[in-house]
Structures are given as structure tokens and as C-alpha cells.
Image 1: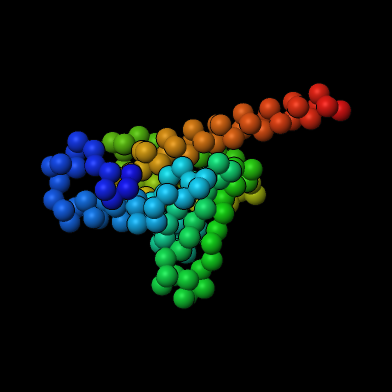
Image 2: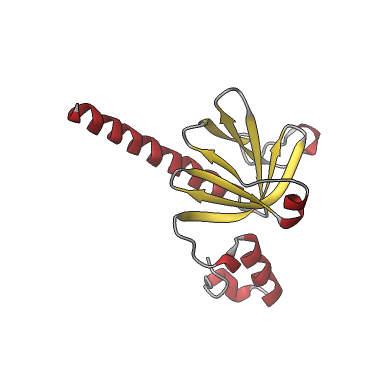
Length: 154
């Protein structure tokens, strides 16, 4: 949703809140080709956490670190659906709490046993999770179709 595209909830919000929601959702970039959703997240891999902008594309996720993280050596990271084994919500239910008071997160389980935690900003976790799992299913169906076409051509 762009900064100037309001829904019915936005009529009730203050101007500053609309600006913050636009920043959180990356509306300042305008439309980007091939991007299904984007927004501010924190990516945690083991002990290292990086903040930045996550984009959901047809083929996977792309994480662009914020400018300060880039000064510290962070690079654009891509998580392709080919590398992902499964995606899960932690804790599994909204009403559950993680040990130590950790924030709810999306965990991407990669091939090779690596796990990447994605912590979306604000209350967007459920929307991100639904979109990522849906896009992953669409990608898997496309791959099966491509494999079937290759078998038929051979």
C-alpha cells in the first residue's frame, strides 16, 4: 500500500501514524517490478541480527540491509525457494510465548540445517507468513509443471 492509498482504517489514524506505516511497508520506494510485498524486518542468523528491508519476489525473499548495516559490511541476501525446506511460525500459535520473552518470528529452515529468523516490524507477522507460504506453494507448483514439460519434451 502506498503512502497516498488509504483504506478505511487510515481515516481514523493520525498523519504521523500514516507516515510511519508507509515507512514500515516501504511505500517510499513506489512500485517495484516483481515485488509482491516489502517491509522492514530484522534478520537473525545465529548470534548476528541485521535490520533492513525484505522483499517477497516470485522466486524467494531478498533482504537489503539498512545503510548503517551496509557500512558495517552487510550485503544483500537472497533466500530462494529452492534453498528453503520449510517455513514456520514461532511460537506455533498466536497466544503462545517463546522462552525468555523472545518476540514472535518466522523461521526459514534452509537446506543444510541452517535456520534464519525473520522478525517483521509491527503487527505484520501473520500477513508475511501467509504470503511467504502461499508464494512458496505457487513456486513449487510451477516447478512441477516445468519438470513435467521437460519430461514430455524428452
